[in-house]
Length: 436
Picture 1 (cartoon, rainbow, N blue to C red):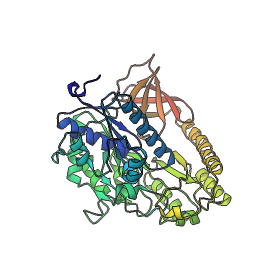
Picture 2: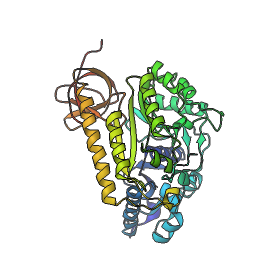
Picture 3: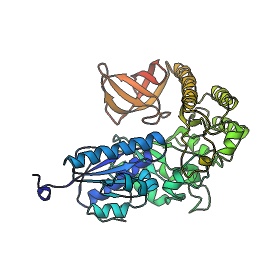
Picture 4: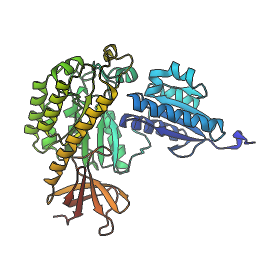
């Protein structure tokens, strides 16, 4: 019989979902480490904390399956305790407590002090930016705000994350400096809505001012913007992007759809004409900007004509990066009151068609890069290649640059100048060149 009391507790934090969850797990781990706890990320541990995602059906299913897997391990005596936190727990706590009672305790997205307490730790307010990063050493996510005030009909995030709350500039700078001191060279700015940043505490959209302060942080070479919102976009951000070499010519701006009737039902606060003008304005201000967007197909009431309009627009806009999701009917959102009238197989077919179209666009854009030179950061070595990214590519979701490791030696985390020698839909092949 196993004697639990003699065993040193090791806390395993398991992260599911988006980069915001990655950040939250890192903060939790930083707090635990500061309390002298032994903490690991997705390794063996006798105490497990699962940071869940509750965004759409697939993510919820993955979260539930992960919880059930660790509950099974608990029943087999392989782990002692299982705790659940994050968005799924915030949104469905009563249901989860009823359906999976073997979990020791459930915590919502704002209950970090309570979670720490049951893990035998105190919440340390003085720990600004003290977190254990789980990303490769050269980049880190930097959350500049929490929550969202947007009324998008399809989105459950405000239910799980609450109202928008900006982090003061001085705290963000302290965190950026601490990350730079650890060797981080690229900051990926994240929030539910970057473009709303500052409205609550500075009474104005203040993303441009934040960027001007961040570029002063020594050691940081790239700053990347994720999750902007099209309505009320602060155009002074583009000026900073154009004039500051450290701010990547890259913007992640989920546009969701282009049909006016769908945009209106989605409560996006924009139109087809305004959206097209916005993209043209972006490209006029920063000509070599890479724009990443995400789309939703199969939203309630989406007709074949709406979908064809969307396809034509994707073809015309030629986005550098694009992702597409089949609509997920989410409880307690305003779209949930609508009839989910597009069959699942039609949703999936439409998503596939958009991604096939984007694959061709991406291939054509990549062919234009052959023979050109780019600065890349080396994220890792995988198999026979070093894997890098240009400033136009974010980790995990965008193109990668592959360099033959049998011919060239590069160091993970370093920047290198390369020449593109071949290109596929989403991969570029390159050779290092001497710095000029």
